Amino acid sequence: MDIRKATLIFFGTVCVGLGVLGIFLPLMPTTVFLLMAAYCYSRSSDRFHNWLVNNRWLGRYIKNYKSGQGISVRQKVTTIGILWASIGFSIWFVAASFWPTLFLAAVAIGVTIHLLWIKTATANEPAESPIAPIEKA
Image (tube, rainbow, N blue to C red; front, side, top):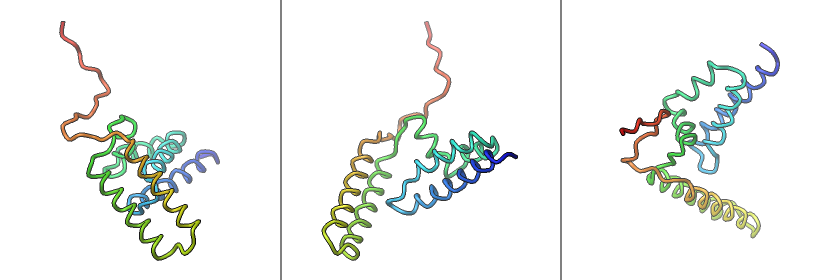
């Protein structure tokens, strides 16, 4: 294995770790890190790439992003609720001055806007097939 592949596998694995942390930490992104990991793995190891994309818990982030399906209303509400609760806690207990409070509020507003712009997946929306249906004449 050459240095380039080993480095990409290393960075891909670090990104997977950060992506998993992002599932549990409200300000840490998940999908971005998993997409970076998928890119690193696609350039270095088919085995790791296939594992990530087909992973029971992590693969759906990548598949939903690539297919443009979006996230559910429940995921949006939960994420925004946890985001504002953690930001509110940080502002109340940690940020003692104006600038940190302003920064935290700006981050929360920016992330909220981003989440609201993401397409909302509906329950009755079928998963997109890579093969287009055949039209009957």
